Amino acid sequence: MSAILDLRRITHPYYCNRTKIIRRTLIDARGLVLDIGCADGHFTKLASEHATFVIGMDTNATALKRAEPSSKIGFIMADAQWLPYHNAVFDNAICFDVIEHMQNDKQFLQEVKRVLKEGGALHLTTLNRNRLTTIIRKIIGKPRHYPHRIGGGYHIREYTKDEFGNLLTSQGFKVEGLKSFFLGITLRHGYQSVGFIHFPKFLEKYCFGLFAKARKKEAL
Image (tube, rainbow, N blue to C red):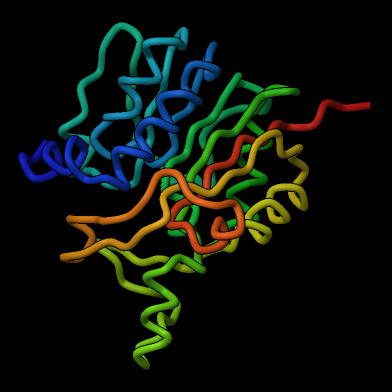
């Protein structure tokens, strides 16, 4: 794990806020957990503090080489749009800032729903398409087009809060929690941020991040 990434996790206001939200939701992610897009396994390790066992998966072989398996953690290289598991295996799935990279977000959600047990929950974060940075780009005549290159990859699409909730509902999930977080902007290609954790409700639609907890509906 690079020193730059370690520093960003400690001092970057947006990432600090995001990590607090993720830590809170991981308390509920118990049993057998699938961490989709685990990268180096940072959140896989945090999830293992509460889960019985966590499987971290990613398509990035370089990132997976940095991951550290343990008696409660295993890793696999696989594509989340074609999950290599039987139906109804996992109690929970976690997926942080990954869905925006998926070529087919609906197929991805159908695959997650397939491998979750009835009543199993999906915990996920993504970026808000209407965040302040995007609005500023429009104002200065540099609107963001998709696919959009960001970091070492591409965002195929991004969502507003309503679009994110509607997508989950349309794919057979019951949305139990949907919130916006961090009102601010990032600087230096995402390595710094300035903004607010607390803000008036009417400004939610301009926040940087979105968090959702959605549960697979039980069969009638």
